[in-house]
Image (cartoon, rainbow, N blue to C red; front, top):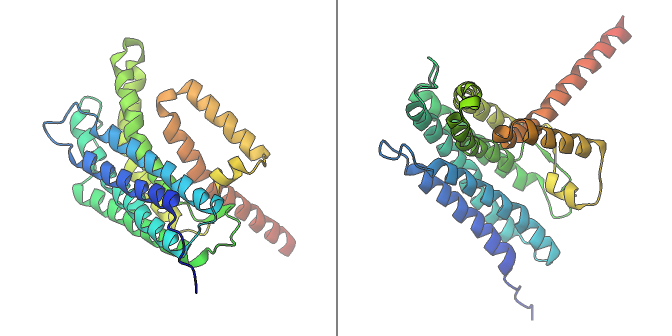
Length: 278
């Protein structure tokens, strides 16, 4: 008689914790309104998306360490990811941009996004996140080495969006300091205007075929390379020079370095082809 499989308690609880954090991010972001001008709702929403990322990083590893990898866990993980890394960041981007336009009118330049355009960008982000998750399920099996991804991982895209409300909280404190007000006057509107643009670009990168490294696996695999050293130095310099924008800049580096590198290789290859043909 076939024995029933044990319920993978730890991996499942971590996966469900991912969904709970994503739902919490949505509810906190939804609290923002005309009477919540000085609240920290968006900051908390951003932190909850990062908490969901931690749960997502740990559940797969916990399943492999306990030898409890299953199709059920994989499907549940994707459903929870759709909430935390699809719906939550898409909604957070709309709330952040609209709310910040009102809250920081003194810093805001002439340009502001139409509400319909913000909705289209957030809907595109959600669609691309769902496509990315579905493609990952179809193309990945249990024997996969888990050392790289095809396309920007949805948690990284969500983390980039979530990092901006967190950074803005630090910039708000910077604006209160007399000697730093000029920096804040420039950085605050730049952050508000750039987030929808970055959201659109990372949405496209999620469904691309550009290879991205699996950071969590490489950090704990014991393997180190020159790329790890460069990323470490970049992170330290960013934290020292612009601590308020350190998290967004690190995520931007991770998201945009592979496509820029791929574009550079493509240009070099075309030049070699032209020279060979000449």
